[in-house]
Length: 278
Image (cartoon, rainbow, N blue to C red; front, side, top):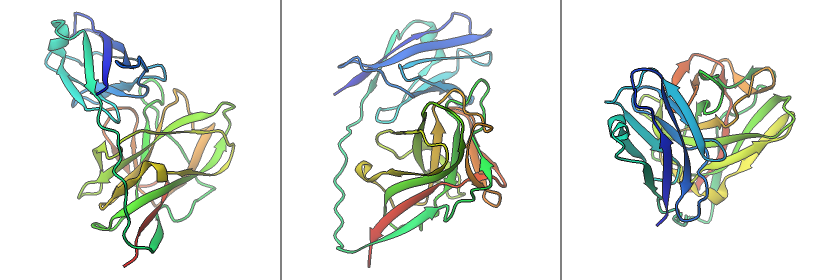
């Protein structure tokens, strides 16, 4: 069973500016863990580790009674009190790796129906983008409701969205996320992904489609489709994608921030799903 070693530095004073920094690696292979979420529970304070596994964030709002949560897709979430760190009880933290074997999906019916969920079409003249956090765009998410019928077991095959403009010369990296919808149609806090889905965008304009069949994603609930920015800069004047004025927008500017809902301007995100024909 693989574990993750978490190296960190925390200052002695928690009532001034507190700085948290460290690195995530796998114990067995020293492989770094990129884009893990590290934050303060119930305070909407946090950050992502970068591509090399390093992270740093700071806040004046942290007290010894607060808790630090470390989450990475494919690993068990761990929570520790800041006071424990202050007392130097933990100089490294090991995160237990979840079993990553995916259950084989067996579809008894020979016939499958396919359907498009989320955006039915793309409004290519209405540009929307990511919300900037306190320092940059890394960890910012935008989500839209898929609209699956409750109780209908679907297999998520493809993801698509339409890029209206991309003026960046280097490829941009994102993470695709899926969340079950709450009864009030808000994204639940935790994703139902069992392994991360990272992808890069290099095209200047047009439809981008990602094949998801190898991830064997399936659910019988309504769910949210979300894209998370993994870049420090992604200004809307340089990169944007299609959005709908009549569609609610669900956004959060950084890891561990709360989801916010606005009346319009929601991202047009689309998935193709399959389900057995009756």
